[in-house]
Length: 236
Image (cartoon, rainbow, N blue to C red; front, top):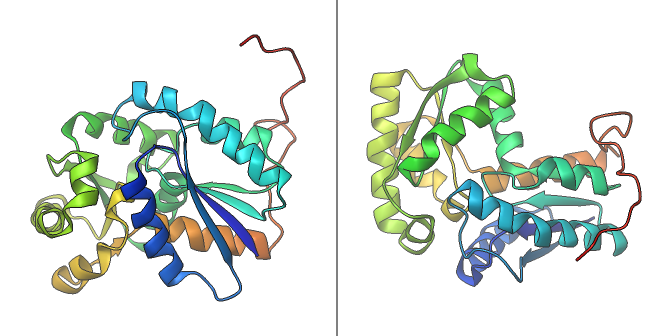
């Protein structure tokens, strides 16, 4: 099985971080290629960043289709360009945000999304609403860290996550915690042990969902929502 993991930002550090963690948990028969966008923002922390990240991400999705991959994982907890990626792809494209939100709703009555930056709290609420999962949302809480800091400083980030997750459990009734950034890949196990609550690592969830979908030969319906776009001339 060949899977392509796309980091939609241009950070080499975050790409290496994601590669290390996913290679640790992939199946033995899974061939994993972890790539990053060559152009665009170094981190994705706004709708503006997302807009710039989408075109190079779509080119990588098309490349995965051309090179015989079995599935693609978008390793950013905003799923930039996910709908468009599904349109242009004949293989499954798994957004780590979409897959993790649905997984969280299967595992407990209420979940909390932990996001690095405060300005992204409303965005995460909108994304939960778009998936029809409002009922399961306990809260969205922030770490007051940048995405780059969450990636580069595991010790401080885990400390903040522990503090924020504890409040989510005690004050919001959270039963599941979602680490809302690919830069936190691999951080969940320590938090889970200390809080004795299920902590979801979206990059890991995305990988395992991709493996399952590829095994089951599942692909997005082309009947309507993800229909292949009509061919046309694009001026560049």
